Length: 328
Ligand code: SAM
Ligand code: DTB
Ligand code: SF4
Image (tube, rainbow, N blue to C red; front, side, top):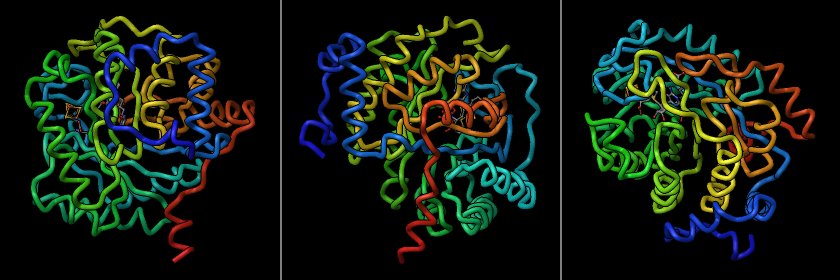
């Protein structure tokens, strides 16, 4: 790694704006250099999602199909049983995913559910997949139990810049989010933390999110960048989509500011052409979700993804968990 691409925690808004405003070829050139300082530039990490508890959530996140505050037509379910989770994990493995992410529409994890979630985690881990969970806010001691069960990553997004956050959700604060992230990190979990664009925020809000993420030390290992999937019935159903070239620019700035993190092209790929997705991969994104479904909405199918990777001369990355275990 050259010093120029070492992770930094003190990015300023002026620096982030200047990066974003560079001629696109210079910006992408630097993003490629940052990527190549830390990763195999031809390998794309793939994760597959499963909603293990859908809908009925007490939070009022303005983008979310699963909030009980909005009438979105999503039916609330109970925690999914082990067999169904393992079937989905098998499918993820067959799709070539290296990581299996289990999402629950909870405001916070309840102690009474921890044991059942831990069983899901340890069984998925035993299949040779990396494990990720997103279960809402954590109470003291819970992250340690998840980690002991074999959890690799905790996903908890900051979603947007600090100033815009209260426009999106009012049932919890930015600092609540940072507190849960600290609990997960202190328990030895890797962090998956990013946000959403296309919620009516300004460029400074988007850059503000990247600055906050870069202030985390160490940086989150995984940074999902979601383009809003508009959900009928939510306050953000009619938000204007972000410009395609600006999406590429933002991915490149994320790659430069968070050089050693997986930058994941996350929700919203259904609204992106394959050429736009290719540009994002050129701009430094090196991860995406595979499988036909995200949590409650569709995702690009396996055939399209394989064709895109083939066309680019890229391959999917093998699970790191398997490599680590083999080395021990
Ligand atoms: N309840 C947990 C939480 O909020 O931390 C986990 C599940 S939540 C659905 C995970 C993340 O998905 C959110 O933080 C948000 O960034 C993203 N997300 C949810 N709905 C979305 C949508 N309609 N479009 C894009 N991203 C979305
Ligand atoms: C993340 O940042 N995006 C994923 C995952 N982390 C949990 C979720 C996307 C959800 C998209 C809307 C839906 O399917 O409900
Ligand atoms: Fe609940 Fe998570 Fe959806 Fe917010 S994003 S409403 S916390 S499921």
